[in-house]
Length: 309
Image 1 (cartoon, rainbow, N blue to C red):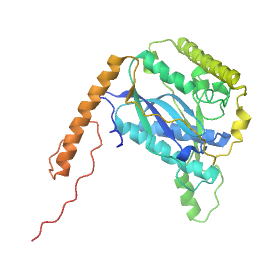
Image 2 (image 1 turned 60 degrees about the horizontal axis):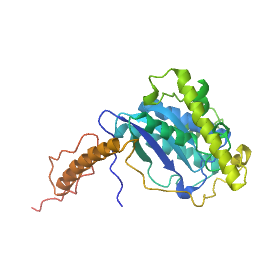
Image 3 (image 1 turned 90 degrees about the vertical axis):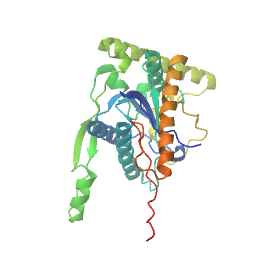
Image 4 (image 1 turned 180 degrees about the horizontal axis):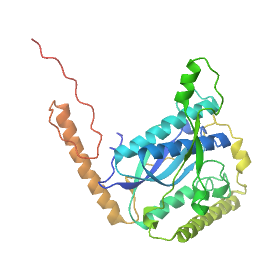
């Protein structure tokens, strides 16, 4: 099946971004250094692209973000910068020579409905608990936004300027491990559906979601008879190991709470793709004055064969 054409409605949207490692290997296995670097790269990517970050969690085999973007180009620029830099740092830390990501990131729209936005935030909060890895989302040793969302603490990481480091090394000078580093901060913005709420009410609602995740972890423990793996065991996992049986399901176009809203998004996307494919067919036919719908990435043009003399 062909990949879905990247689409963000006019005016921008909330998007849930997911990206998975190659073969579900634990290449993002948390460590203090990887957490520090992840926050640094995420902060730098946010600063250069201007996206609003609402929540995030980085697991061992994948990550999830809730971000608001103006269009598909801003989303692609942000995620491309994040993924390329994070992949290089993961390769350095774990001496991994192959590619890190299994495929292109997945960006699923989230409707403006509060129920839909809170449901996706809850899904992110449950990561790590629903798999039996930790009993509390706050115990996860990787990069997450939960503590900062609760108490307003800083999400500061480190950006390693590898370009400057490489230039100095080419001149034959030794470089210290942290000689070319900068502090970068991830700035959090409330969910669009929560912007009208007082900060304390937002925190209380997050605490409720955290309690639900803890209850799910406790229920899983009773059902299986096994305790969660725990923070220290997570830190000791083999980053090369592939997680067997990781669940994959077809990605929806949009996470919506009501059928009416879901159908409205589908209709808007249908009209968008119809205009895109018509223009693409004209381009393949050799027409030059082709108009693609706004907000898309046009395909490359056809080969221009020289005219025989």
